[in-house]
Amino acid sequence: MSQFTIIASLSMLAAVAVTSLGTGCTFNDPFQSKGQNGVAEFSLSSAQCILGCNTNQPVLLGSSITVEATVKTHTEDPLFLRVADASMGSAEPSSQSCSCSGSAVSCASTCPPGQSKSVTVSFDVQTKAAGDVPIELVDAAGVVVDSSSIVVHPAKTIEARVSSGPQGADHADVTAAADGTYTVHVGNQVDVVFKAMDDQGNDLVFTRHGVIPTYANAKALAPTTDLVDRIIGFTNQEVADALASGDAQISLAAQGASTTVKFHVVK
Image 1: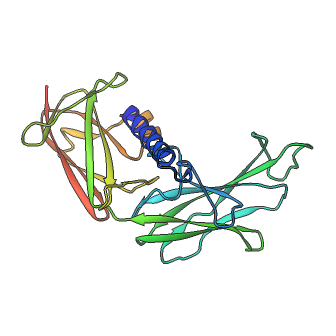
Image 2 (image 1 turned 180 degrees about the vertical axis):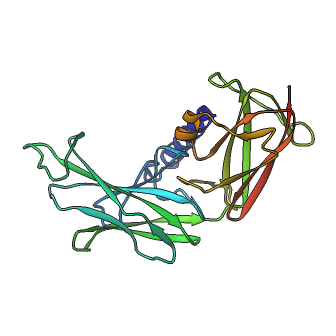
Image 3 (image 1 turned 45 degrees about the vertical axis):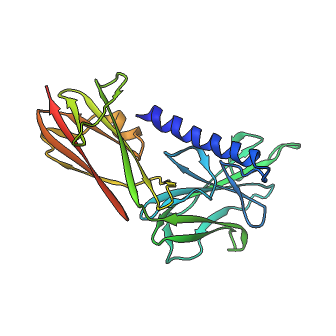
């Protein structure tokens, strides 16, 4: 369920903020991180980071993660993001958007007097190896404007939560039986919200294909045909349609861990 995802993400961010303030430590912004040069703010974007996460949040190995860098500047020169170590990750070409005091503008334009220009550059990084992946923000000449890194961990465990109900209606949580099997009803949708965690219990974030689902007995339980859920669904959520009575499974696999969610589909 998307509500579970949002609540869990916001709770995690609030806990980080409270812990930082309560211990007397310097506040660590849970939404973004200063670059090494102090010029740009770097953040991660994913289903687990509704409002963005700072770069201390571990990323799932083998997944794609969206990285953003925001800098306030009066220059009209374009900026780009790149991975400094190709053995750690590969990246799609970066894109750039601009605003003047919060209002979107063309990046080629100049802000009116008294307004500051903000440039946000983003790209998707495909993680290849565990460790710190160096990220650089550069200008058109390749000169480094600022830099940061993302930390990548393999999964140790995958946890799943199941809810079900009619399409378009609120879905209720489903409790597993003693044998670990979830009972759902023909004609309903089934939501499987999952998270991959590292060996320290950290929730690993990812934007795309970090956890891969596969189905056993798709005649009973199959990926949903609802276009809305398929287009705007969260990447840490698998939505299925219960089609016919029978036993079925959804296996969830990430680099380092896997789990199988078992179902009884009944009328």
